[in-house]
Image (cartoon, rainbow, N blue to C red; front, side, top):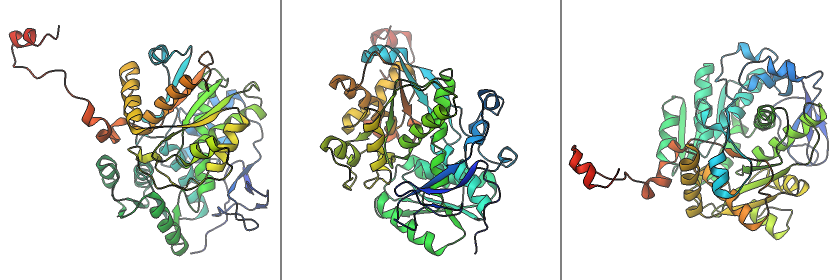
Length: 414
């Protein structure tokens, strides 16, 4: 089918290459025709004020004036993600020796991960561009979000995941119906297949392939919310989990946009990336001083971060170096301890990506790379109920007793 030109994508004015700066009209394009670099959205924001944002709904559509979505997006059935909790984490801060720490807890989104944000923006753009099917390759959370968003919108979904995905994520995708395919291979294999299918099925919007420029902009809403929830100011430091790398680069983009729009004070901030050692191509490149990412074969319990050839990896390096940050990695054992530490100090059960972020925070403090006296935000991008296998071997009830007071006393639980 022929994709119709966009008629209303809000403040979006076109697409621009992140490498050579070439521009083209809005449409289902993701690679530059001049240099094959990635495309991103260009904007004319117009007048955006704190008051205009604060008067909007308590979800990501309060920022619709900063996103490539139709002006009337709030009238279209969608999952309405966003405006999740920013939790002051004093207990975790004390345990790590930090003065001021916040957890942006995105497990409160409709399918319990930050992927609801990016999918909502991708769906809005895809419908405006004339697509009929919402699709994706995924490591799990995106599969959940696409299947749910398509069901809510009343359109078909088509989702492809590695066959060794956590059972929880398989179930929580299949429950929404739609086409759901497991593939024998890792995420990079699945992603290559999806790119080939996208070339044949021209009415399928693969959110992280042929409509990726729109999809990626959804991660900006994390940055907007953090600044607004801090009282319209930027944190001194932020630690972000890295899979494709898009979340980190778009949070930085959000901070830069807020500064340019005079919505926050222009101040230095530092951005840190967090990876699992079993899939740490960006951390490896950062430590080696390289500008090019060498792909790896993932081998980690943090499957939502297991992207061996991250599309935005080079841009993560750019952001972290520009802001005097770093990219660090942690072992699977450290990931599990990170999950448990966040749970027992703040009552937040994060998935493995959250464990990576907490463990990386601890490692950055120990190495002196991160300033313990500076206000810090970390991202918990998903719910621990999705990755139970990671902690199942190391957690258990305190005791098993008979239903009597004597048994309770004998167990020494008082």
